Image (cartoon, rainbow, N blue to C red; front, side):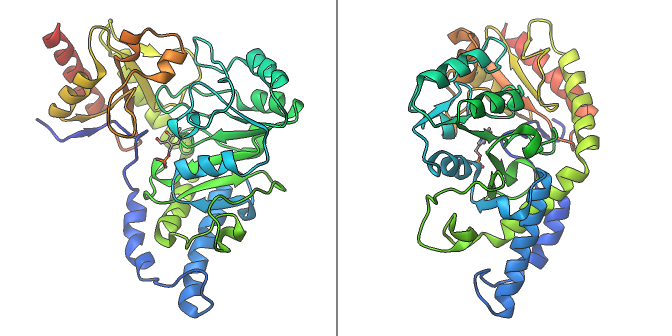
Amino acid sequence: MGARIYFDHNATTPVRPEIAAALPGWLAISGNPSSVHTEGRAARKLVEDARQAVGALVGVGARQVIFCASGTEANHLALHGLPAQCRLISSVEHDSLRIWSDGPSVPVGVDGLVDLAGLADLLAAQPAPALVSIMLANNETGILQPIPAIAAIVHAAGGWLHCDAVQAPGRVPVDMTALGADLLSLSAHKLGGLKGAAALILRSGLELQPVLRGGGQESSRRAGTEAVVPIAAFGLAATLARTHLNDEAMTVAALRDRLEAGLPPWVRVVGAGIARLPNTSCLLVPGHTAETLVIALDLAGVAVSAGSACSSGKVRRSPVLSAMGFDDALAGAAIRVSLGPGNSIDEVDRFLAILTRLVAQAA
Ligand code: PLP
């Protein structure tokens, strides 16, 4: 067996080498960013430089960035910080959002895209103001939602739009103003940073109530000592993702296209023909369960996820694919291949050979 192949970048990305190289310098800064002494001020500078860089990633000022610990926490804060009368969440959102829906789900079509007329009807029927949460890029399929059009509908109804953009930076441009979102979630470990740092970005002028209270950090919007090193790494990851966006997106798109072109004919790609992340292929392998395929691929040296894997690691029927109208058998037969700029043509070709062999063996 050759070297292992990591095709699970939507679960988490490898740490960028520039970050690994900078770690010793950051670790040497031991102060608490809230302390006024020299050590504290050095830590504060790391946090504030990172805030600037993360804001620049999505085209906003540093003041609009609230650091927190995970994309899940950013989503939680977004859904609980505003005086909304109802929360409307699409049926293809990440689990961290879907559990908070307190109204009917915002419907999606068979193409995985939000049904815009259905959203407008829902908003008209629900108490205002509503908080609507729609992701930019789906973590299972990579399908991109038309966020500017969605924002226009939500704002016309007097609501707020939260956009979970966790999977997007470094893969597609993310400009908060162009998207028209009021709140936007990001997570560092999906763009080459460390686990333990994330951000909720606020539209300029929007304020929200903290969920974590009891400290004045993050301008009293999220209490708790900042995770200085993961935040510093987030800042560098944001700068690198912004600087290398075009090159890296082209690299992964070429690999993804080669992979999809070389698939055995009975394997279907979910969302083929729809605007998608350039790195993501959700593959339906009829007659196989995702769970056994993921294990067989792992034993053959390839890391992918079941399209339907949840955070406990268990594989279940994918709610995303079910919402798109796939039957139970197909919704349980999806594997997610998610590439990164460090992958190679050789890895794609080896993966195709392994998948073809495994599927033929099992037939
Ligand atoms: N939102 C989306 C779309 C995700 O894919 C994920 C993680 O997979 C999250 C939110 C949660 O992010 P985190 O792992 O940082 O909590």
